[in-house]
Length: 249
Ligand code: FPP
Image (cartoon, rainbow, N blue to C red; front, side):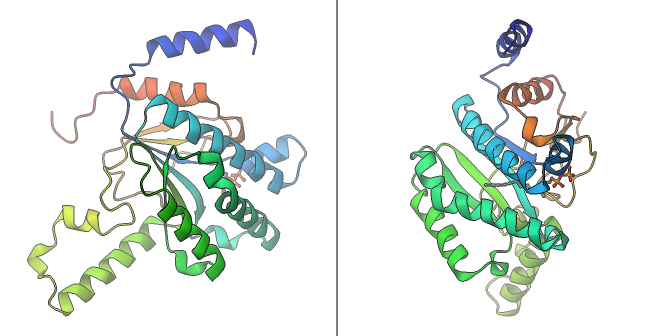
């Protein structure tokens, strides 16, 4: 790290208010393909670097004191990509299921968001195992969104609620905003305070659309594999300088 980079990092750390951190930060990990192209590498190498960044940023979020961090790892639309790219992404995810527990060293709870029915039984078994094994690690939660899309999540929740109304378990009057929130994949968690999207795109791409109703959005042109701890601090610093009114004055 150059002298100026170290200086900038120190100044940022001094400016971030560690007593006023966002509770829940969510990240759209975008730009892996462009990163690979820029380095004349195959797309899968971009995803491999992206997976490394995922590990670094989840670890640093825990160290910082963020309570919940949510990563968009694979969307319901990502199946449309080339077979080779989908396979490379699945291999990275499976590697995380196999080795993630060891790397976490009991420091975080892991939860998967999304429709897991699309995955093989062995994949789902590993995913359930890691969720079960980390259940007791309270204080820091990492959500990994896989085969996730907000519209799909809301559709699944509505279907479940309709079935409960039909069977008489609940009545239509029980359906409040809080109740719907509780039936989403993030049920029981507070909404994200801050949603980060690198890579210069300015959209949510079907990510946490219900939960993100009042989230602060942070966009930057940095590509996800280049995203560092300082960039997370930069986003948090900007967030702390915003005025959140939740529709009030
Ligand atoms: C978007 O970049 C990124 C994805 C579709 C996949 C994100 C997945 C990872 C970072 C790996 C996750 C691994 C673990 C272990 C959770 P893009 O390919 O659309 O980039 P581009 O827009 O530059 O082409």
